[in-house]
Image 1 (cartoon, rainbow, N blue to C red):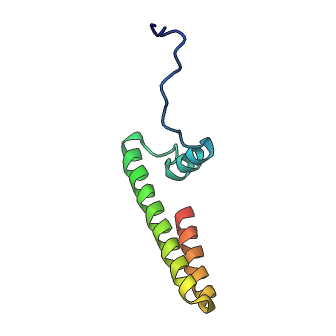
Image 2 (cartoon, rainbow, N blue to C red):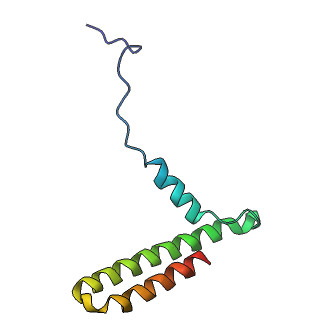
Image 3 (spheres, one colour):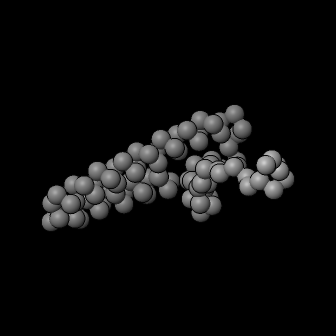
Length: 88
């Protein structure tokens, strides 16, 4: 019995990232349109590094907050400041 390639199912593909996650990453990493094309790769790299450092900082503060819940305010203020710095 021969397999007809027209009726065979397509090969399984790896699951794609959800479109919402792709849009979020693109908005966080893509530099402004006013930036010259020669500086765009460097700006994209730097914004990616800043995002990774901010996530690492947030994870570290979360772990420290779990260890000592009484210091919540001292942990939230640096987290907000790092978010503000990323936004600027």
